[in-house]
Image (cartoon, rainbow, N blue to C red; front, side, top):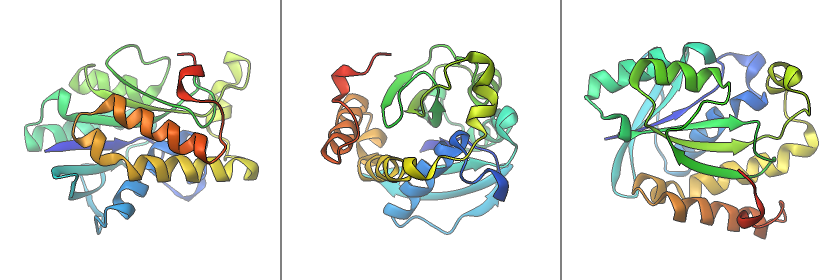
Amino acid sequence: MLLFVGLGNPGERYVGNRHNIGFMAVQAIASRHNIGPWRRRFQGVSVEGVIGGDKVLLLLPGTYMNESGRAVAEAVHFYKLAVSDIVVFHDELDLPPAKLRVKTGGGNAGHNGLRSISAHVGNDYRRVRIGIGHPGDKKLGAGYVLQDFAKSEGPWVEAMCDAIADNAGLLAGGKDSTFQNKVHLAMDAKGFGEPADDVKD
């Protein structure tokens, strides 16, 4: 069993926020792979299904971002999962919009959702970092992530979630580099930015 966690804040007012792109990505995966219905569980909503031959629990914590670890820890303990079985999808200020990086462990770069998860279950889980760009001033970051994506950003956000959903089987199979490359090829084919090699970490 793998655990795919989408990070975001629950409630209607946050649905379109940049901070909620992790929710959007995991919801797209569930939709693409006909996994449903969602049900209330593990201090959020979750659903079990099979992706690329691997059994996966999809989880959207309902605890608000800075307490995401509580929901993740509950699911991890219930299924007796290893930290390496966890894949977290989240917004990343330090990547340009429409870019994606997969990494294991590392720092949390001020992301409260990641900080909470690391505090509860450890740090060596996989992260799918979805670039949302940076407002230019560190002090503006907290407000920026809680703004809705601009209407003009809608096409790349939808394309990114589609590409993640299309290639989720690679991620489930542990083929992180192939997954990352396939997503960037899909985004590039749709005209969103430069090839993956031009993105700086």
